Image (tube, rainbow, N blue to C red; front, side, top):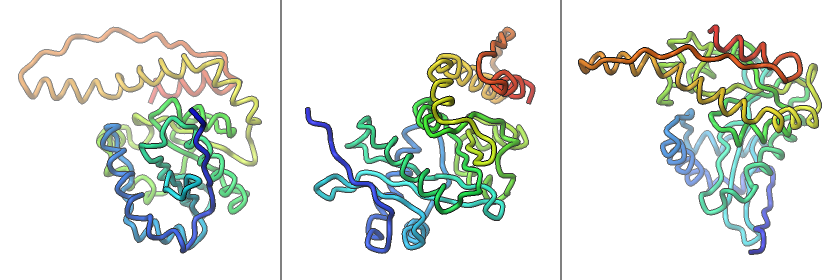
Length: 252
């Protein structure tokens, strides 16, 4: 089968009619994953388009295929590439990677001194971010802007986030710091080398964060919770911060 070709452009006023379908697809995709995202209105998406802070993808025939936009926090110190969505028809085509690259380039051009960060529950997104030069970090390295964290209220895991005082949750945090970063070749190689470790880490993380909530739920239902064994803390390998990153997580 011939590979689908896409056109990815900076969104503008001419694309505002796509705002509703974009919002609907964001919501349905979040429900399917079992996680949440900050809900956005069509008006908000249209505003991003008018400001030139979004990219939109189409097929060669003009069919809408994907979208992503830029948000700024802490007076522009931090930038987030938010709301990445690909139409179900075109998933697993490599389009998400192309959109991430385009919005990353737009972010670097528009906010050259800002730290670019993201939160994700998916290993595939971690891989894409690594190829752009992002590194996994602890939540303490992200914006502490209350407005950003308020956007997590629509997520099913919000109670976990708050129970950890916004220091940890189901998502993995990743950051690109223009003033202190490794080259994409290095972060890409690191991800390839440690992808299995990241995958295992994410599974362990989910269990450790969910366990207290499952325990309370079972006890509320009059059940019994079996005692969990200690988890082996295997780290190491990544340039000096990887083990430190794991160590901080397990001690949050």
